[in-house]
Length: 110
Length: 112
Image: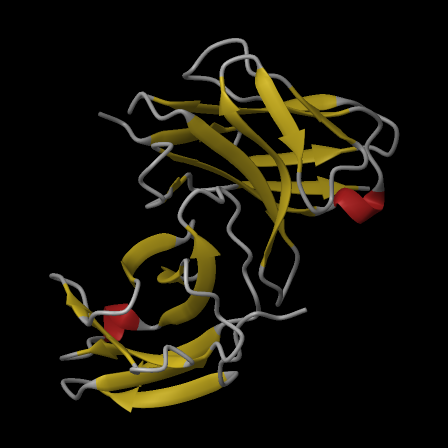
């Protein structure tokens, strides 16, 4: 059972904001939303995570809807180096396992 | 502080051979894990460990063994390599209560 649903691909113009949606309609109250990305041929890289409040760090912002059934990762000013596969993952904090789906392939174009 | 280091980066094996993929971390992380990634797919968990002396199976453990004798090291052993084990292998580590995982750069394994 897939816990998250993401679009398979999306394009973004360099310098513009990239908004990556994720649907997690069956999320439980104690499950967090995590985002990772994988640049070609490299190991995955942690981006951000949240429970119910919106979160922001130096890489991105995470917007979680009030019912927690969906979220959006925002890359505020996409660069060519942001071209990668982005994974949305839900998990409880004490569950060490990361379940990766197919993710969204984001291509940033000049 | 090197993070998570995997060796080798590339390896070609013949069917039936055995080998060990090495993973070491210098962040004193309790949790370590191994994933495999096949072309065009997401990562799948092979084995994981929540501390020295403790290991458990993940989603696709068959054909692989692990041990965790120290906090720093978590080697993955292929007992008898098969072409189906051709993949990219990633090792990851994290603190037990902080699930921000750090990944190594991967080992690209080809079994012929």
